[in-house]
Each structure stands twice: as C-alpha cells, then as structure tokens.
Length: 262
Image (cartoon, one colour):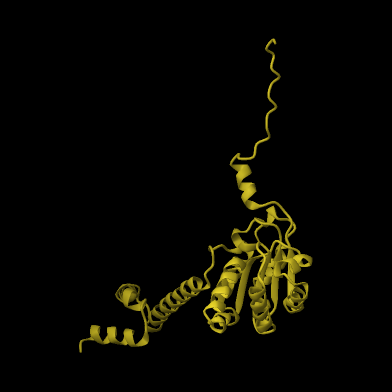
C-alpha cells in the first residue's frame, strides 16, 4: 500500500475530515519555512479540532431549532435602558445552567426578549450544552398531538432532556386543560435538573388566565421561580422603531383651511 493510500485510510479510521484537505498545503509551507515536525503536527491537529468544533456547533444549532441566529453583540442595550446589560452578560457566563436555574424574560412584544433568549442559547451551544427552542404555541400543538397519538412520554422527553429548554411567547394564547397539565409536567420534571429560559408578555399575576386554572398556575410558578432570575423589559418595540426610521409613522400635517367661497 502506497503512502497516500495509507494516510487516507488512517484519516478515515480517525474520522478526520479537515486534515486530508490541507495536508499537502501545510506540508509545502512547513518545508519552505523550515517548520519543525512538532509545529507541523500541531498545525494539523489544531485545524482538525477547529473543524470538528465548527461541525458540532452547526449541528447543535440546527437541532436546537432556533428561529434565527443573533448574538448579544447584536443587541441594542442602549435602546432598552430598562435592561441591566451587566446582568445579561452575567447570564452569558452560563452559570445558571450549571446551577440548573431558570431565566424569565417579561415584556411586551418586540422589546428583544426572544433575541436575548436566542443569544444565550447560542452561547450555551458554543459551550457544548444541549439546547432546544420552541414557542408556546408550537409546544401546545405538539403536546396535544402527542396525547392524541399516545406518544406523550416520548414527546415529553424531548423537552426534559436538553440542558437548556427555551419556551418563547407564553401568554399569546390560552392553554386547554390537557396542554396545561403536560406543561406542568415539563416544568416539574426539569425542576432542579435542567434550566429553562421563558419569555412572556404577561405578568405572573395573569398566568392563571393562560393556564385556565389559578391553582395550576401557582404550582408552575412555584417550581419555575424557586431558582430563577426575572428580567422585566419596559420599552418600545424594535420593529416599531425601525418603522419610524423608515418613515412609516409620520405626524399628520393639518390640512389647510379651505379658502374657497361658498
């Protein structure tokens, strides 16, 4: 077996995908620059590690089902002065995941709560935590369908296994009794075992309306808030701000009084 074939076989057995593409290029550079064998090996290994990590991040990001990809660096903290940037940066250390704690982001539509949740999710993925994102609307539909098809235990495991579960937009629609019951099960099974980031446009006092049962809402909040941080976001919608920039919201100019004669 010639050297090239033996190397290709070794790469396949090791599961290396980056090194085969760059081996000859780096070998030529090493020869021209008189790089030592150890430096050459180090370069090859670092390239492979970087490539594997990049594939891991892309795969985990796809599996997380994030609605879009945005980082904290893209968040306009200056536009939402009600948010303590230092506190959000502290969340980004991901200690809350290590401690199995939760984060609740409360605020009206468009103030950036989903962006913050996604940014923290991407940070978690980069640190190799498993993440799953779902809207409350899709969660309810998923639970109802699983209940109808007798696959509810398998479906519940999808929401209880990840290190970080994000449930977006709680409060946009009321849950029926079945969905509310299984939502409680998700919260209860993740209690002190896995972290949740939850966004909602409703204050906690109105959660009885969301779940159709104030006793159940209290039980959910009791577990959700026991080890948690709540961020209240008060401000204008980013989307409305952009509309204003584009000139969609202009003050009307009073019409001139008609000077014509009767």
